[in-house]
Picture 1 (cartoon, one colour):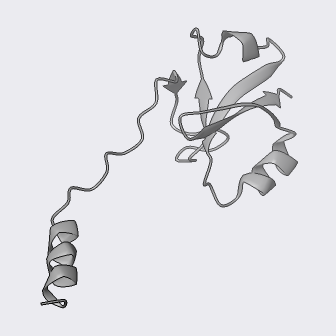
Picture 2 (cartoon, rainbow, N blue to C red):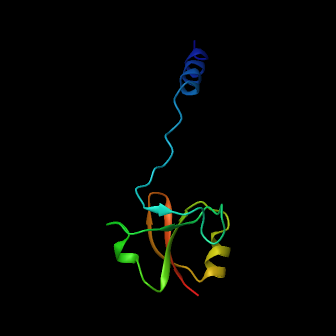
Length: 95
């Protein structure tokens, strides 16, 4: 009888639906930041981003779990300004 309980629990968890993907209300645009297809993307103006926008820098959002974030930060001079919805927001100087 003891073996049936763990087996039943395993069967129930196998049928559980997968969690929904993280959605974001951040105003992303473009096909990637720096290069087409990059996981990081530029952000436009919204109530969530207005305080981070700067005419001398691009506001960029990158997934928190992106493998090469350190390289991106070093190469671009990005400064972290916020975290939201699974993304790190960076201010990246232009030029």
